[in-house]
Amino acid sequence: MKNAMSPAKKARFKAILDATTRLLVEKPTASMSEIAEYAGVGVATLHRYVESREKLMLHLGHQAIQLVSETIEEIPADEENDETYISQLVEALVPLGDKIYFLGHDASVYYNKELEAAYEKLRTPVKQVIQRLQEKGEFSQAVSSEWILNVLDSLLFLTWQQVREGHIAEKSAASLVLNTFYHGFKASGRK
Amino acid sequence: MKNAMSPAKKARFKAILDATTRLLVEKPTASMSEIAEYAGVGVATLHRYVESREKLMLHLGHQAIQLVSETIEEIPADEENDETYISQLVEALVPLGDKIYFLGHDASVYYNKELEAAYEKLRTPVKQVIQRLQEKGEFSQAVSSEWILNVLDSLLFLTWQQVREGHIAEKSAASLVLNTFYHGFKASGRK
DNA sequence: ATCAAATGATAGATCTATCTATCGATTTTA
DNA sequence: TAAAATCGATAGATAGATCTATCATTTGAT
Image 1: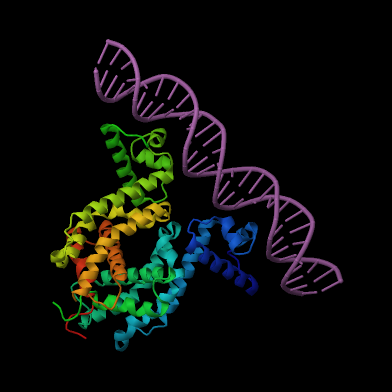
Image 2 (image 1 turned 45 degrees about the horizontal axis):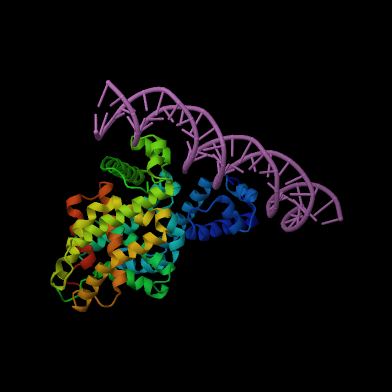
């Protein structure tokens, strides 16, 4: 599906990608036949849209990157907004968990150079805000911004898993992440 | 390999399991042939030790559970030691990352009921210490002990990845985890 | 030194997944 | 409504992985 698609086909393609996402979250090893069935489409048709399983995965990867990119870009990242940036980011990203899932957990996505580069590019604006917050003294300067961002990533992923498995209410997820991220678990008022 | 093995065979079996661990960390999709080659053993011999790929994975899972169990049991978990328990735990578990890797990341391990139960059992003593620390007011009581433990797990795994990729020095790993876990990233002295 | 156990190499049986080819039916579009 | 595009179903070609069978060779305990 390299060529331009009609709007109708584009919508159908998107429906296939979304169905694939939903299925793979439940069963990461699903075969192309299972994916086709789940998407309500014949195997042949599935292959008319994506030329291989690997390409399908890469589509999902790009979709995720695109989605997260747009989400991040919508959050103002100038110096006046640094203080609220992180919480806005967390609020916005928690619901995207399933789409982001593949970025870190499918082999054919994880080891792709192009996607790896796009992922790194995605992180830079966030990292810059973190660095400014460190310089302003809002965040600890004892650790690298890279580490802080990685922890944020991990927390987001953990949270999404917990929400998905029904262990955490979706509403309380963001504040849980933020509290943990900001203060850890040591009770305040103690050394 | 259900029957008892001679000490020599037992050692060879252990060598195979260790080699498998090392390879799968680098290449999670490695085939049985690749595993055999990497372990310096013929495919036939590999199958003389494990009857299937899935059983091999379960062996690795059990190995990991066993290792973590022993490690946890060595840390005194009575009330007087609660304050130092977590740091001792982190120090001891960071180096075991590769062995633990499979517990959370291989499908045939992750979806096995027996291992799932063993994993849950593994967590209870740690969870109890966390609960006592919460009751003593050392840890925040605003969140569940389950969440605290999950975050600790995530941090341990993230750290092990970062050490493996050379982004964090092994020596500094444990204190990084502990600091993050205790205090988060908000600079102290701020609200 | 001998003999049973264990091994490696190889070939192959079996299975499963991916992808293609074909064709009649359905839908879209002009 | 007629032509073109797209579809689902199916069968099959290809490929790769798992596991087994066989046999000559090596290892190791006595």
